[in-house]
Image 1 (cartoon, one colour):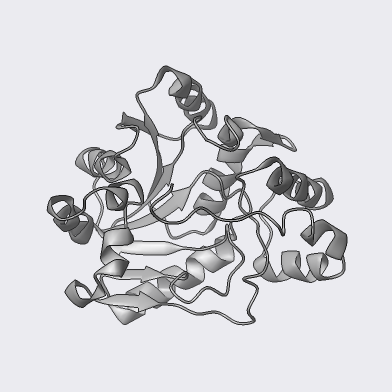
Image 2 (cartoon, rainbow, N blue to C red):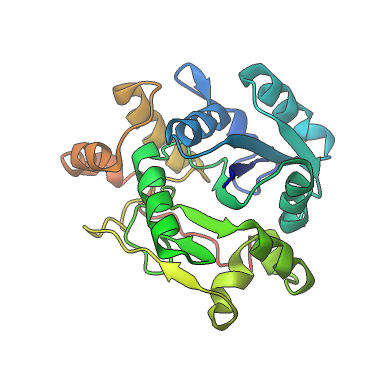
Length: 241
């Protein structure tokens, strides 16, 4: 069974343009996501899915520098971009990642993959009942399901790739994995300058290697002034992004 990790990445961002290639320590944000995915040990291959926009030439250049394949496709139809990757790379299972999650935990990715295989479902996500910090969620889908929804998904469902699946759970075997303790009050994704301040402080302390969610959140628990840096940031609604 072939397992493929696809990381969606582009330079365009309404709130923080160019964020995926900002430098965190000795690595770009994108490279941190790639390395965390690879270090999970469950992926046969990692591919970055970017766009054909000229600005994303830099993303393709970074992919070449860090040694990962890069597929270039639609700007707004991200589902179509993923399907383009699947046309070029064999897979049975896809793990979807976004390049604004530089604090991904490889151990958490591996755990989620084990649960997915044991459950035998079509789709698994940690975000149906949200207990993980934003930016650490994992989702896994069977490749035939991604191909199936191409004929069904419209509008924002094509931007969010998998949202048609979990909003139409009567059509698929969907599993929501809920992990404790509830850490959903923490925001560890990169979408604004205040997010950047927090993430930069974390990387300055821990260095270039991925950090386990437990180690990271235990450290943050004693530093409420860091948590407050981006506590006010609101996540975009599903239909906005």
